[in-house]
Amino acid sequence: MTIDELRARIDALDAKLVELLDERARVARDIGELKREDTRAIHDPEREERVIERAAARLAALPDPVFPGASIRPVMREIMSACLSVEEAMKVAYLGPAGTFSHLAARRAFGLAARYAECATIDGVFDAVERGHAAYGVVPFENSTEGGVSFTLDRFLSSRLRIRRELVLEVTHCLLANGADLSRIARVYSHPQALAQCRSWLARNLPSAQLIASSSTTSAVREAESDEAGAAIASRLAAESSSLEVVREGVQDHPHNATRFVILAAEDAPPTGDDRTSIVFSSPDERGALRRVLEVFDDEGINLSRIESRPARDRAWQYVFFTDLDGHRDDPAVARALARIAERCQMVEILGSYPRAR
Image (tube, rainbow, N blue to C red; front, side):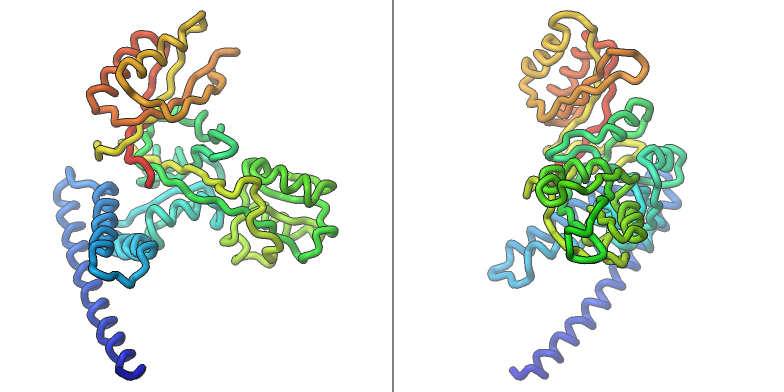
């Protein structure tokens, strides 16, 4: 076939795609109308994930697939996001401003068609969901090199919100400046977490530069724009909406730097068979107390993938332990373990059970 004939075939296929997309949106609209009549019908993000996984599996099962496997997920995510906007107005709060890694994580989870509300602080994200101003919130939870995000962990201590889902985003930090000459940079702006993740690179390449903490990486870009001797560490997305240029890419100290984000909601997720549960507990301040708590999980055959201590906010020199464990709180072994440690701890709170990030 000639190029013109092949292009004509693509045009015909595109016409069919548009018709199918419109038909899908009409069905989604009908579902939305039924949901408004039945108050028990709620948004089901786990079903969305199953639909995406099913599409990826169908592509992989084709005899000789040509469509890139890595592209099927974002394509399906955007189709579902667009259809959901017809079905219901989905509002998502995130730690802003636009261009932050939290913004990227929110778009990865909910697509471009969701209604986004940027919040200036992590407290603001929690507050937006607690007050019903947003159905979901997206906040950073843990970094692969710097550990837990203290503002998020501390806010969970005073919130009844639950983790509905987790999402791991590979974080590539860029150095943004007004020019490529590093010798002109006297100040580097960024969020404290980003500065910490690039500590060694900055010490080697900009040893004399002053490091200035900003409320977000996007705020850092704005500050650097007005400082001729300033630079910012932020994402490439943040650079696209600024006058700064990317002068160095991948300035994080560890090449496999990733941040784990959690999606906040009023309720956590039902069991999927591949789940994680996050809890926080405090044990008595006495010899062997923590060991006795951890023995319970070992007795029940439960793997703990993370444990991190934080100061208790209401008691000086007392600590709470944020813990991630394999399994869902409704799994028999997990349920038994949680009941047993409740007898040995001063406080136990379930932050949520949710599907493990792929």
